[in-house]
Figure 1 (tube, rainbow, N blue to C red):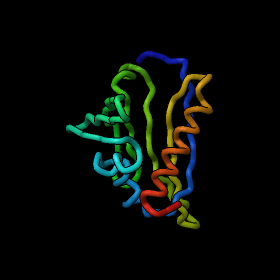
Figure 2: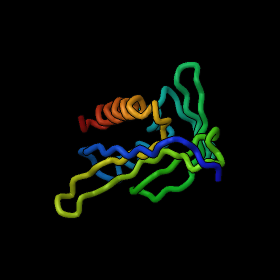
Figure 3: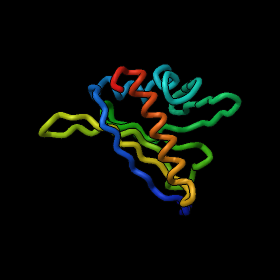
Figure 4: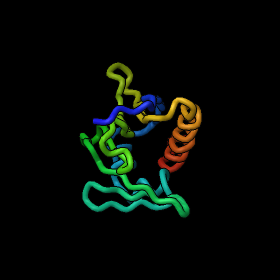
Length: 130
């Protein structure tokens, strides 16, 4: 495994949605293209994300239905870098949060956080949880 100088980022987003519904929005290509990218296609464990003229491919590394989905950009293969959507439910209040885990260069941490804030804001609008 190649070490990288990227920094692991974890951001928590409270979200008013059931874990089952939320999981569909980051596990299905047809749901991901409603909020994450302009278009998303999947073939097996490879997802193709399209934004305008830009295209990136990611592989599903691990998932647990209604809990989390972990992807790795193909360009990051061989490194410890990935991005993950993880659903957390508070045992006492049943409040649902979406944890986003990603890696960024030290000088791109704020930019990466802003990207995820925008994307999750779009997700909340899409599912009516804004």
